[in-house]
Image (cartoon, rainbow, N blue to C red):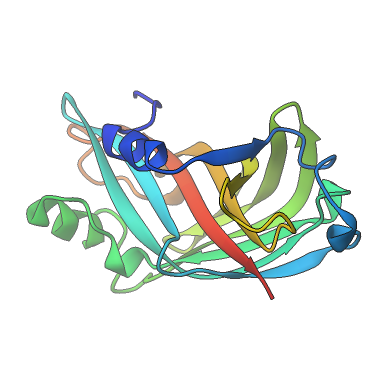
Length: 200
């Protein structure tokens, strides 16, 4: 599985200039002296996933339905993340692949229309933070660890009222009972959350 960013994703990122907060627990003004709740910008937020389909590296997109996020840039351990993903609205480019992903052999979105990630701890790391939490997919809950970096557009307010949370990691689809088409679809699924946050 190629875990590199997709070309479309790179193009989108090149179109924006971001200030990456490499040390999120050190980047804060007096406005963020305590944990601060943020609301989700639904129009800009999404989860991009990639996987191997035969010999092709393929990607798709899940819309984010909701997010309950608290950010403390002075003490990242006090931050929390609760993201609900609308698997029933998955888009995979090819309409036949999209139908297969929604079908009973894969995500069974008729019975399980949403996935959810809830953090249990946030740990500072060299390039941002490690978010440990529980991922529920197709009715199965497993612990996962994701890498996170807070970002801010160069033209965004300097008071951190607008942030972008980039979360990435990978999971084994078979761990969640997503076992259909094993001869065609690789087991590793790479996830990249792009969550646009607005301070409440």
